[in-house]
Length: 214
Image 1 (cartoon, rainbow, N blue to C red):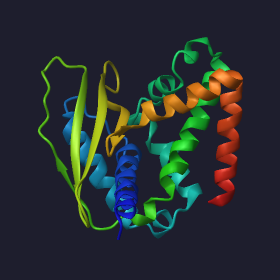
Image 2 (image 1 turned 180 degrees about the vertical axis):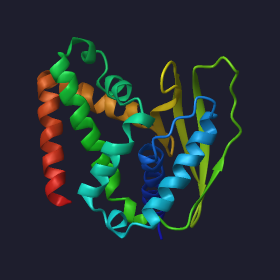
Image 3 (image 1 turned 120 degrees about the vertical axis):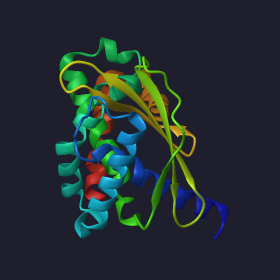
Image 4 (image 1 turned 90 degrees about the vertical axis):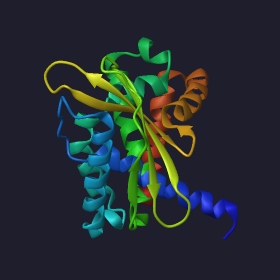
């Protein structure tokens, strides 16, 4: 097996665990440590995936339903979308922002859906968490061990105040690539050429095309 295939296999496996952190049960505990949250969510979703043949087979409708019901309480999706869109987000109308979030969510779900069938027997090892009691944003590092080389995954989380307080994910890193920053460069090119509506149209068309392949 050449190095390119090894890298692609690692990327697929890592993507599965990134989605795992996103679509796990939406239980928030105000006093739950961020690294404990990531481990709990990942373990829970791995069990769900391994026990659901339809999800493992890439059932898009089922994956989307899973994300719709569980992702939002665990992820600051508005922050993720706003960060990916960049400065143009502040100029976008409420309706444009709503459309951007909808299309961005579909894009992410479809990006990882094809990897779900690749889940095998894997374990999660959490790296030591460095944070002070007053920290509102933290970096959680984890390592996925299984077949092949270990895969490093990082998560940025923020502390949410008030009702439903807890830690929420707002960025993900797989194999050294931060998700939000990766899309930001792609979106900036589209916005400069066609504006916010052009980006929305491009995302909608991409999602529609990917949906036909699913």
